[in-house]
Image 1: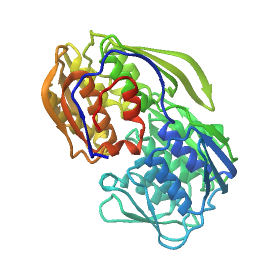
Image 2: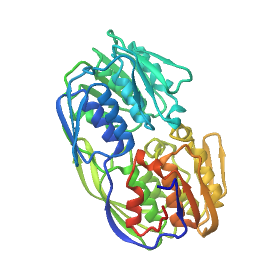
Image 3: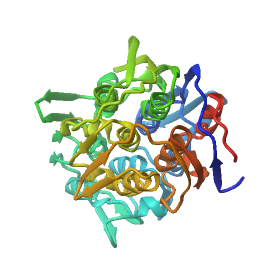
Length: 442
């Protein structure tokens, strides 16, 4: 397989119905919580991406029994704090910040030192944001730079903590929550609004949790050392992966798409609210509840008249993975769009705010980045004729897929490197997009 793809033609109008693979966040959380549930847990529609495969590999190294079949996965565990592993075991989190940070929360009682490492991109990311609060439980960490690799040595005498999470990071919040289930007493968390998949799974599993929702923060109390029952879970379709097809359709003239059974958790659909404000035609239909989550079908139509936006900051955390795509819509809007306080974008697999600006610059869209803000001067008549090369982006899957959407909707001759990056989150992306009629040279 080549390390790059070429796109020389815009995608033609289409009217299709598709289904997206399982949600990555829920796939990883199911596996981690199943490793703490006493008995056999089963999942279907588990995302078959590298991030999820790395999760299962790490759990196997920790002595968890895992069986995989064509459409299902079984995890059998002896319950909370039942990991068994040799001294100096090495866990490789690959490219997954969710895996790396959340798994550390389950290791606050590790008897022997454990080494955690990751790929080049993950090794550059900040782990102090979780090792500091986890250290308050009693675990000790060794790291040279605040990133990976690091070592963790647990404690037999963990104590519940009070933790203020002020970044709006679901990974940090969830890491502490997972540490709390293995700690006797009540851990108290005051967390800025962010994704609540972990809270919903705790409620479904009847792990003792109390939540008070305030305007800007949630107050979360978790009581630990309670048995967790095994559970079966059909992973809903990933809304972040669906976003690429939402924007592709929005920017492709005379096109429609139906995306079936998507997880529309309210903490994940900020991008839908933002795109609607910008004139994108999105309808949410057939809403149903599934084990705390909300599922629905998304109906999207293209629209020639897209509006600029001064984006409300309160929607940032619920759209954090989709801003690169939102920037493409702003590039097509008739006017100037403003996006503010996006520092968390640069804490992802690559400095995404900077990469969003780079892609726009290569397309000839004027934009100004200052501190953590970006100002985008839209051009609704943009139709590219030039050659564009996208490479050296730390193999960030979202940079790759956003570039594909840009190439198929704005024109030009694109050469986009590191197609294997999509294996971390959405391995079938190029196949799915080709089914809509995209002409991609691989």
